[in-house]
Amino acid sequence: MNSNLNGSSISGFSALMYYAFIIKKKYRVDCVAKEMQIATDTLYRYIRGENVMPPDRIIDLVRATEDREYLDFFCDPCGYVAIPKIESKPSQKEREKDEIQLPILLGRALQEIEQAYEDGKIERAELQKIERALLKLQQQASLLREKIKKEVL
Image (cartoon, rainbow, N blue to C red; front, side):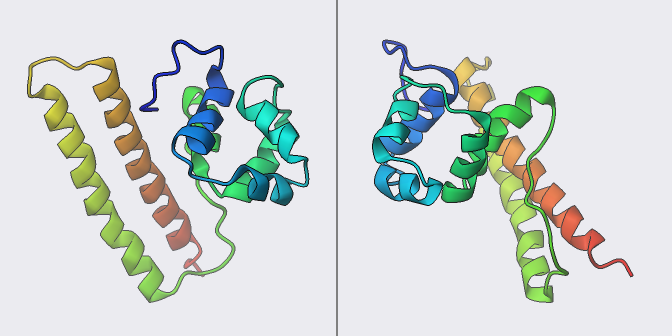
């Protein structure tokens, strides 16, 4: 997260939501609340950290936003990588698109690593950028693996 919420009582998962909804304005609170079938004010309370979001509501949040970052918040510390469930065999065009993404994401990860080492030391913010880039690479590779597994007869 690039935001500084140090002066705030918002932490953890609420800080992640606050950053996405309020700072980045990635989603409209009213639209997501409607999709989650909860009151807009209730979602605002979760975002501001006034109420703790129950686990079943996190499922609704992920479905409403389609944002894997919320899953990553829980998966990464446990040593897992969140990838979407593959229901059907991918088309050749879809598979090729996924294949092309791998070197692009690898290049971005290597760029983050090299930039971090330019001054001879890695700071916490640089490490977070590296970790995000490597996580995206892992997710893409895992997604491609799962799609290829659907090809097996």
